[in-house]
Structures are given as C-alpha cells and as structure tokens.
Image 1: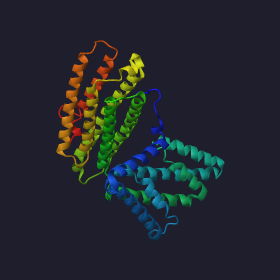
Image 2: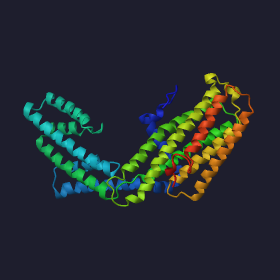
Image 3: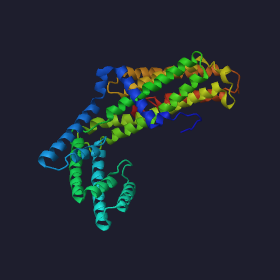
Image 4: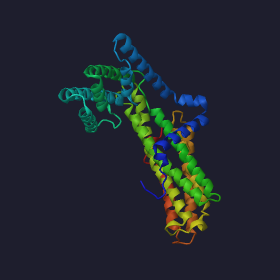
Length: 395
C-alpha cells in the first residue's frame, strides 16, 4: 500500500473510527428508515438478547441453585467467553478457564513461598503478562494477572470459587453461542459489501460529474482522500467476510445453505478490494495532473476528453449493481444492468482511444491517459461475470 504525503490518518485512529462509525450508522438509519434499519440489525439484537438471558440464567443458577457467595462472577464468565462466533467462543472459553487456573496456581504457590508483599505482587503481574504473551492469548486478556492479584488479596478460597464460577460461566456461554441461535455473519457481510459498493459507486459518479464540468485541485484531492479511506475500510470488509466463514465452523445445521453464500461473500470482498485500489489509482492520477506533478501540465490540461467522464459514470453503475447482487434480494435485472454498464464502459473506452489517437503523439499526457485507460479496463475486468477473475462473486 502506498504512503503518499499528506495522507489522512484520522479515519484509522480510535476516535476517528468511533465518529465515522456513528456517522455511518446514522446515515444508514436515515437512508433505510427505522423499520428497515431494525430489520437489518435483527441478528445483532437477537444475539444481544441471547447473551443477556445467558447472563441472567447464570446469575440465577449461581445464586439460587448453587448458593455461590459471589454469583456475579458467573455472568462475568459468560461475558468474557461469548465471542462473535461459536468457534471463537469455544476457544475463548478454554482460554479463560486456563488463564484462571494458571492465575490461581501461581498466586497460591507464591503466597505460600514468600507471603503477601510488594515482591509477590510485582512477580505475579510481570509473570502473568509474560505468560499471556507466551500462550498467545489476546492482548486484552489479562485474566492471569487479574486472577492472581484477586487471590493474593482475598485468599485461596476466593481463587477456587472464582475458578468454579468461571468454569460455569464459560460452559453457559459456550452452550448459548453454540446451541441457541449461533451467530451467522453471512448476511451481515453481504450488507457490508453492498454498502461499500454503493460508496464506491458514489465516488465514481462524483468523479464523473467533476470531469464533465469544471474541476479543481481541491475536488481531486477530496476524491483521493475518499478513495484512501474506502481502501482502508475495504480491509475491514474482507475481515467481515473471514468472520462469516469462521461463523460456520462448529455449525452442523443448515451448513450447505450458507456455503455458496460464503464463497460469494469472500470472492466479492476480494473483487471490491482490487477494484477499489484501481479507482484510487485513477484518483491519484487526476490529482497529479491537476497539481502539475511529475511534469504534467497542471490546470491547463484539466479539460479531459468527455468519454473518460462517461466511462467513470459506467463504472459507477457497475459498482452499484454489483452491490445489489450481494444482498439476498438480488434480481436478474441487476445482473442485466451490470452487464449493460460493462458494455457501455467498453464502448466509451473505444471512443476515448479513438479520440486520443488523433491527438499529438508523445505528449506529456500520454502516459497518464494510458494509466487511466488501463485502470478503467482492469476495473471492468474485475466485475466481468463471464471472463473475469471473480466469477464466484456473482449469485
């Protein structure tokens, strides 16, 4: 990935991600309406209710059946165990139990050997953090030193109670996520792909509108900034597709129903990633042109041939229809519109090539024109359902 000067970093910062995520959520709510937004978030709400009920059940079981002195530890164990997918929940359950066992054992042995003092505390924290790294536990999983410190403060009796409660909480969490409405991320991944396709379509449309009229360096830099941000978010979209594949592990019911959709989501994420980087390359070329970089003429050459704008408009239609094909209600008309946009883009490229053939040869703009033409052609090739490299991305 290139590292151009002036690249914005705010989108990747924690606060930037929070702000952009909230803005995207509000935008979806306004665009879809409350009812459609609620339907789209149905799976997330279902999982929230399920985890809440699992915590309540764990509390009831510990407080009223097992008469545990600290029943709150069981729902804490549920929350620490339940993860995004059934498979990762099982893994985290074993990690939590193992971490508590190590923490209880280490604290008990050190307390017996050297008593309770600052040396014991420092050894427990340092060794706990080292073991966390050596055992390849997640960076935020600090159960080993936390458990050790709690045992150091409250005694070994608390340590064994904590171990029992974590075991119970982990068992409830695993059962809840594995047996009761296990989370699926297939449709969630498809919706994210549709949203990203729509945003890429908007960017291509704005670039087409700009090139078809009067465009400036500020406009071109805004296109490039948007393309860079979308490139970063496409990486997250690929992670979502991988998460959808993981959500099918340890799944025994209706697995075949989702396998085709999983292949489509994974291939569509790769397709969008490639096409998004190529659209970003087009935006970078336009910035270089208007800014006079690399010996290019600058603003005096801003009046580009009209077929280039029309080809970008065709690419916008391709992105848009490709996104519609990823959601569950894909229609044959969407595929027909995508194929029509592919033909229109190819027609505009032939028109542009013919127009450039009449221009003075070996001018400073020729290498740039060649790069822009090639990027447009590569984007169309990525989305070709017949001869392109991502045929599994189509339903």
